[in-house]
Structure formats: structure tokens, C-alpha cells
Amino acid sequence: MLTGGAAYSYFALIGYPVSALAYLLIVATGMKYISSKKLTKKQGMSVFLILGIIPGFLMIGILAVEMFITAPDVVFSRTGNVIAGIISVLTFIVFAIWTKTWAGIVIPIMLFTPGLLLRLTSVGDETALISGWIVSITGIAVYLYLVYRNEKKKEFARS
Image 1 (tube, rainbow, N blue to C red):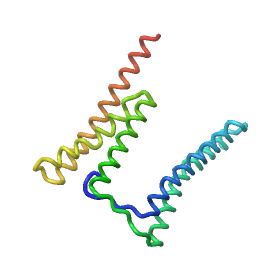
Image 2: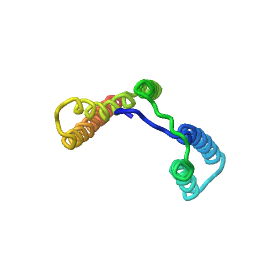
Image 3: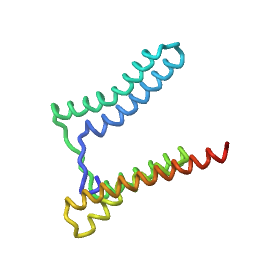
Image 4: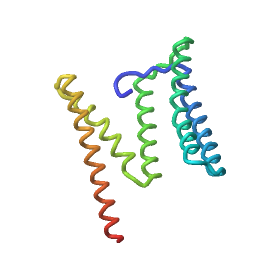
């Protein structure tokens, strides 16, 4: 989506949000069930396993429908990509504010910025891909280490 126009079938545009809402409803129901019943460890793990598998089946179902039934595609222009990008950025910012951490902002920046910046250089595609990946993973690792170190300092100060 960051390069060129994005095209989605109507099944994808409708199916993914509907499956996400259905999954949230299923998880809420599963959590209510777990909290209201006295389950053994095996039963609880089984419920969590089922809840973990459901999103995969929902996505596979959407992909299967797209393979067997032809539907027109919606192609987003550059403006559509910019609007989708803005919505994504706002979503990450709201998530970061809600969780009171910088992870929702720092990790996407670390994932996408190196690749975007390397595309502006005259470096070859393979070199840009490998370098971008190394910089992204290293940046995320450094961020997680800094967060871990700060949490340890806070924990040590409390005791």
C-alpha cells in the first residue's frame, strides 16, 4: 500500500471488517464463558486455542471466497492511499495514547521508515531490502531493550 495503488475486492472490503467484528464478539463471549465457569486448566487452554484459531479460519474463508467467486475490484488512487495511510497513522496514535506507551508509534516507524528512506537512494533493490530489514529489527530491539531497562529501574526504585 505504501507504493502504488491498492486494489481490493468487495469481498475483502466487506469481509475483513465483518470478520474482525465477529471475532471480537466471539472473544467477548469466550471470555464471559471462561469467567463464569470453573474450568480445568485443559478446558481453559482448549477455549484459548479455539479463540486463537478462529481468525485464521475467517481469513482463509475470505480468501477462498475471493478465489472461487469473481467480484469487481475497488482500486484506490494515490489520494486513497494517502487517506488510508492517514487513518492508519491515527489508529496507531490512538492505540499509543490508549495503552499509554510509545510502542504503537515507535514500532511502525521502525518498520516502515528505513524502507521508505532507502527507496529514495540509488541503492539496489536487494541491498535496500536487506538493509531496511536489518535497521528495522535493530531499531525495534533497541527500543524494546530501552523499555525493559526503564521498567527494571522503576521496579528497583519501588523496592
